[in-house]
Amino acid sequence: MRRMKENLIATLVVAAAAMIAHVGDADAQSYPSRPITMIAPFPAGGPSDALARILADPMRIALGQPVIVENATGAGGNIGVGRLARAAPDGYTIGIGQWSTHVVNPVTYALPYDVLNDFEPIALLAIAPQLIIARKDFPARDVKELVAWLKANPDKATAATGTRFAFVPYRGGAQAMQDLISGQVDIMFDQAANALGQVRNGTIKAYAVLSKDRWPALPDVPSIDEAGVPALYVAYWHGLWVPRQTPKEIIAKLNAVVVSALADTAVRQRLAEIGQEVWPRSQQTPEALAAHLKAETEKWWPIIRASNLKAE
Image 1 (tube, rainbow, N blue to C red):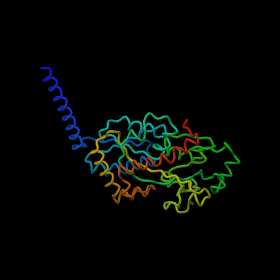
Image 2: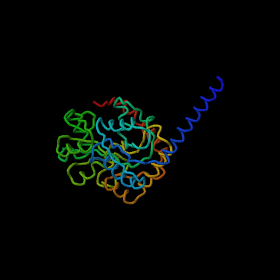
Image 3: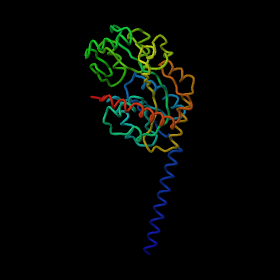
Image 4: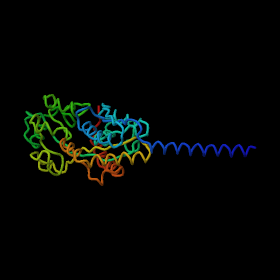
């Protein structure tokens, strides 16, 4: 009798496990059956928000469900990324992240999540270099004069990112840009995509693009090599993630939809207009995003730690 009971229990356990697996498969096959939330960890008006909204519409058409962009902002993007980390791994919450949220912040903040292990990658999306910019009436005319001015006037300049000047933190690039334009901030290191329109309109000045070559969108702005600080290359790249343990079938479906959207001529044109360059097709895979993030953390984490840079 006891053996029969044990066998019955074992049979029920196996059956229950099979049923759970079957339900999981069915959920993945019917996905999506309701709206999807895409978290943008920065305020409306910035590059991350713009990228999310450009992608949301073609994804909506392909998936047959609304893709709703939610701006979960604060703490340098950590609020939004943390919201994604806590979400159910069912494909109904996806999130955009970028170089600062997934490379800089893990070293400068004490985070309740692990960027390398708490998320499943979907795809690399777009990339843009970083610019050194300043208010339009800042006295320095180029990078060499900027460095000389900072050495001659230590602690006088205010910056929307930090080294030896007064560091002014912001919830997002759009707000920081407004204060740069109005003269409340002197200098800023920002995504080129965020500064593109203002540089073109002459409301701010650009000293250099932090890349090996000049940026086609601003051909008159010298590369950092030309400006006299060789090899200081920093690019703001964006990727798309879901919470850890999201089913592989859902990840594959989301990746296919994103790849299709990034191949669309109208989408690529809209991204180009805001200074974003789409990654090559070979780099738009979950594996490529995972490898890129790993390489970026291996490159930058020792540098950031050595600088002892901490968010306040």
